[in-house]
Image (tube, rainbow, N blue to C red; front, side):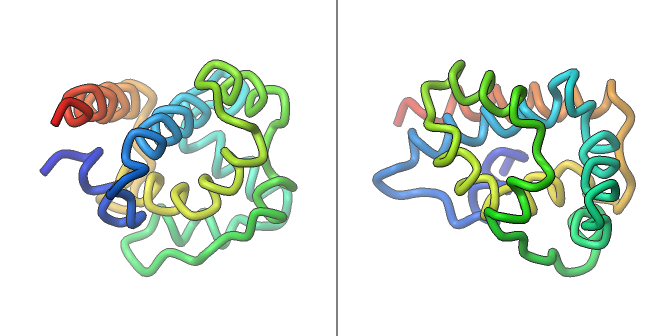
Length: 140
């Protein structure tokens, strides 16, 4: 099972809307890796600046992931980057934010399996692997 499958399983993705979830997952990965966010470390910094560092730290650590509400996520996210990614994938930004509130904890958790933030090269490799899995699993 690859990282994409791990993320889908952890987030409860599957069934009839699997293609939609795959597009949302790709959008989330692109968002995290965007220059405006700067990967997991940038995402961590954004959450800390908004007083929600404990939430993202729980996703990075090897313990249980704390939940995040859509309102909390909207408070943290860079709107321009989110708008661009949503447009690229043809997803309504509010729908993407809603999906992100349930999926982002699992995404960050799976991208940090040892409880450590990967450097940008390792993160890009993980994201490429997830994209490859997403492209390959859509043809069942």
